[in-house]
Length: 379
Image (cartoon, rainbow, N blue to C red; front, side, top):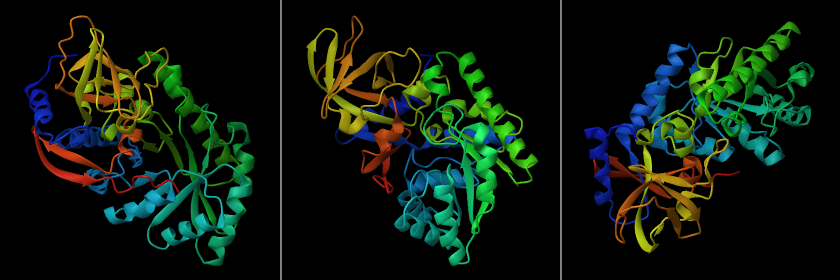
């Protein structure tokens, strides 16, 4: 790790301030720095910033992002959108196909309160939304999802124009643009150059698709890309109009592995207590999969780990059970039973969703507690 600043040392004082463990602790100053820096990155590249709020699920954090200049929020599910209405957001993108009468009704109810848009990759998704919206006198903005290599949802680039033509003909819908999640860049990349190349290829495919749709006479104003690890490259790509990072607000061990941040830039730590030291190379803490999740670092050729200690990056959480986190220790580790440690999870989004609330820290002291208001909103 690079030399630790006085500010970082002050942040570590929170280990003693936490009333009991395990607990997730959010450093509000670090969170604000991360928000401001990503907003500055987007502004410098002339891109709109739409944070993915599924990372934090916290109203107070959403308000910080909007105050810094975010154009709106992305959410994964309608339940999250319904919660975030209370943050004062006026523009929400639901980046998930809306299927079924119950969900369409909820989408239209949201459309009567805020500017709402959603993603889709099939006419079978588009037509029921359009019919219901037209019957209510509404028009729903949609972004066509493009598969740039993740092979999750999304239409292949070569099929995008045909889909756009069919969707453009559906009453009650308006094509707002195209979107993708270039998450495939993470497991394929072990270094900065590869990550930059994978991102550039995804951006180029997206811009080409948008130009083809426009050439077919269909409006396609937005070209939107996501992921925190690639955001710094997306922000500089010609033709991209919007970036949608989520994890940047807190960062995690995966983002540190991809050089999107340093471990000491992470804004949420899991504070845990060493409860067992059964061997020289192993310790056990009271934060297991119910706190850290079981997600592992998402990087090509990365060692198998669920988290790292923020001030001892050579100490890895390599295995979790529900209530146990197993630490692999380097030779000479002085960890003892009763010591408290700050763990940076491999995937902070999953860890946040396991918590009812987070303790809020500032300059090493606990100053508040914020509810994870959209926790478990999977519908």
